[in-house]
Amino acid sequence: MGKTDVGVKPGLLERLGTDVVVCAEGYLFECERRGYLQAGAFVPEVVLEHPEVITELHREFVHAGSDIVEAFTYYGHREKLRLIGKEHLLEPLNRNALAIARQVAMESNSLLAGDLSNTNIYAADDAARRTVRGIFDEQVGWAMEAGVDLFIGETFSYVGEALLALEAMRRSGRPTVVTMVFHQEATTRDGYTAGEAAKRLEDAGADVVGINCGRGPRTILPLLEQVRQAVSCHVAALPVPYRTTPEQPTMQSLRDPLTDIRPFPTALDPFVCTRYELADFARAAHAMGVNYLGVCCGAGPHHIRSLAEALGRTPPASRYSPDMSKHAFLGTDPTLKQDNRDFAERL
Ligand SMILES: [Zn+2]
Image 1 (cartoon, protein in one colour):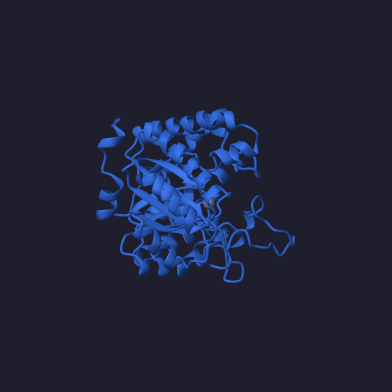
Image 2: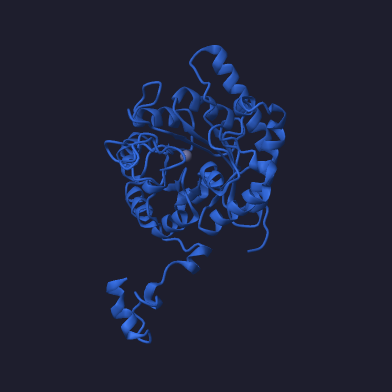
């Protein structure tokens, strides 16, 4: 695919008007898993220390079907940099993350997204709100200078904080996506149901509202139904790829019966969904009227490809989607050695 200017491609709203949009998230977990980011503070210093890792990960997600290259500024905000004593890296970190994402967006048909996230210091008082607003404003400024096509504000537990992010993003004039995270109680920390939260965000001018992170496919769907019924705008859904249950509805609340420990965030492996479960989720959510779909923390390119294919897409990675017909033991190809096929039962 030839190089194009980021700005001349069909934009987010054009795409949503006629089709679904796929968005890969979950960069923190994937970089941690690969050994380039420390669990705990979860700050994306990797965009400065190993930019090639992020370039490659963006490319892998686009190859797998993501329509959006989300600049890896999640948890790259002033509060997180303060926490690790590196506020001097705030601006270079943001600018690098945006430049890396822009490069990959420009070499593909994907859109470049600026990204704001929960600050973890939000409170309803004026002082906290002022600080949070400052955090969002400076990140939006850097993203605008990088020429982003849209903004994503994600993983907010407070509607109040999401509204501050939305206000900052809307000043850019770019399309906005806002997704909330719902913990065990299934309401925001400021007491709104999923439907109420979505409606407030739609009324405040968000173009796409929805839910990301926290919940797996099975436990995000009932809340998505509430969101879909509450709003008339586009709806987004980006679950984590973990087998959450009604009893343990979030990845943080999962308990491993073998070890009796809290597996979040570094021992969630036994709970990972298969690619086929993500495909089932994509079909169910799409049938419900959700047309912005993706996967959050824990996502691998195979999840994104499977989700994209379930939505009728054929991303470049589909060239390598499974074809078991020629498998030495499990295949059906008539030229396969017959006794290997018989042996399949004993594998
Ligand atoms: Zn997440």
